[in-house]
Length: 419
Image (cartoon, rainbow, N blue to C red):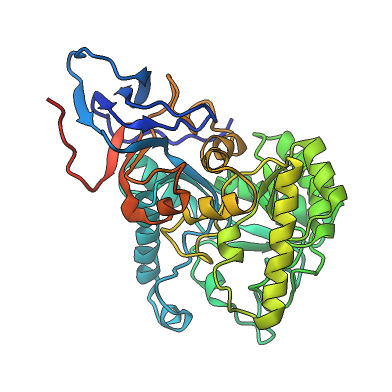
């Protein structure tokens, strides 16, 4: 079963009335809508009712747009983006923890109520969020990512030292595996520690010292071993960092649930993803974060990667929103929505990718991802029209209210009670 942390506090009985509802299911918007919340869950969704409900506080949301809490399926919350690498190297461990707490808060403030951390974050943070000790998104964790020696999960420099991102994790966010025996032992240890998802690197990457995106990572055979191991346990999904086509194809044929990045997908690999239902998490926010970086080579690489994503979307590959926050700016998660529309999704489809599609990928769709009766009341109220100007959601100031299991965790407006 997928892990769903409990809501730590009892929520108030509320009715949110008057907003335009965009429910995450691809259904048409509902103007002047009402959502009633009781005991952390949604008990009514539909047109505004002209009657009082005993004991329910009425929140006037006229002029706003009500959406599900968003799901970011690819974050790295221990990585800070508001201090230089040099400054962070001088931090005490406590300073890194404080920065991580700030990243968790900023993610919720951006409208993300559920996040999948794909290396670095440890189960202690997940437990603290679930207990209500800290504010943050509901968390699914990979804990560490896997690669061969010299690959994307082997951040050891020639002199034996490690780059910042590995040093700051309280549990290393990386694991090196070169044989089938090492693969099985490592994933078993991750499951024992509390991993919700297993992340493998089937290609190289752009931020580690000994590999390039075009390099080979874990082979298909090792991916398949991991998938079989997870099927024999709690069924944790497997996802793959894959920035070249050979790596993506090895991951898809090995049975992963999703491809992270997918910056060089061939028509054959796209077809295989569609046949197997493999989801693409394109992390366009990270790909496009610095247009000037890398000069002409960088611009050409971004153009090829963008075309790969557009081709996959046009062919019908399923998409879930992921930002690679930590590389991309923390707390600007919904910037990804605008990038997804420019890659071929409609605004409604981009919202679906960031809500119900993400919840399905995390196996949480029975409780999260859409505004439907019976689901947990994870809600976002925004002043921006998400269908007319989806880019506006990238500014956290446009996110006026965030509820998590019916509990208000962000409120910029000191909510007005309706009369």
